[in-house]
Length: 596
Image (cartoon, rainbow, N blue to C red; front, top):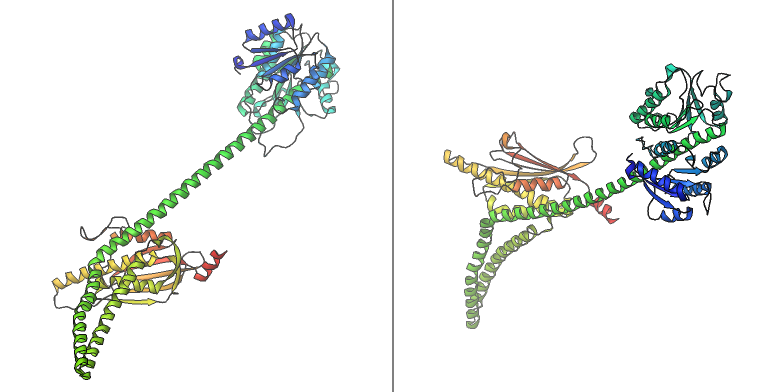
């Protein structure tokens, strides 16, 4: 630990003793604040928290035991270590304050070096593994006693006569889980596996001739650093051997508390209990901190997921909008390619109507003249001729009306919406728009065995089928031009076949696919280009004759339905065969799904 960052609060210590302690702590690098009583210290907790409290045994407003109890009741302050200062060494007072929650007790007249040893040991950081809450279960505190016959701890207070030191018996009577290690060959604590639960406190005999207690303490410290598990270490020296020099060596070896062999049983148990309590308290605090950090991490992850989902939803909306715009652009491009044919379809009936308009006017004039002259036979003949011409004009006007209606349906913008579509009706509209391009040379045959209604986007037929049939017509016409140049006298019969049916879904998935196949008698698609024709801006047409967006848009529309589109070459006719597959569910079933 960087002790320069540690703050110690002196509470209830006054006069020269206070000045002496402030000088000692400041010299060691601690930051010190002085408070006259417990009330002032508790009032200062609202502003900041100290790293340690050094408290007089008797305060003007409360006792040190009461202060410790109040600290331990609050989750914010219960982890602060407390050192109680007494006027003189008193085992009874020390036992009491340790039992009430203090971590150490020292006489004001004691050795300053030993006081500093305990303060630094309490402030020492332990890079231990944070216990996980999921695996946290209640378990009895565990204490290991390391001694052997001939050691100060073995014979402490006349124990060891029955093969068990007195400390082991006292700990067992107190309900602790105790492990006695009395064989020097078993002193290799480095054998503890990572993740196991070693003892919370190890009491090491520093006066045993069979092993080096300080070296064993260093081994324990190295083991707890490697395994990231904190073990508190208490060392017992031989009677009269505890000194400031030994305290400095013990602190360097990683020992947390140092006692003399003449310590009383009650006080030794209190010192061990204080180390175990502090270790368990810090475990719980780290567990709570880890739980809080985990909760914060989960909240941050949830926020990040919400943001990602929002971004994905926005990107999906933009993608749908972009797809709709692309479909609309491709439709307008298709209409542009068909503009000449559509204009011709309008021009023929329009010219027919305009030509008949003069004939009708002349016939009506003759009929009126015949009525005035009383020639009813001539009048009827003229009116009959006018009626015949008007009927012919009505056929042309009806053709124009149907063509305008088809154009309006084709050019609408709701192509991205899923709705009920009458497939034969949509195909008839597409074929009407393509009629000028197909002409009399290409025959279109339809075999529609699938149900007429499909829940899909209108673009599935209006755009996908139209692009494929239009491309098939272009390929057939190009082939006819090439063949005519080579064999002018050979008559060809070309056709485009459109079929639909229901087929079982591929793979292990249940359900059926709505399948539309479009085959032609054109030259087909070379195998090396079959995987590329759906790429954006890829076209086999001459420069200026194609945008390369038609089949790419078709691919995107079919993908939006969760379906597939593939192209092969027909074995019999030799032309290309496009197969569209989209999942099929009855329109009634779709309506019942959305009605809820």
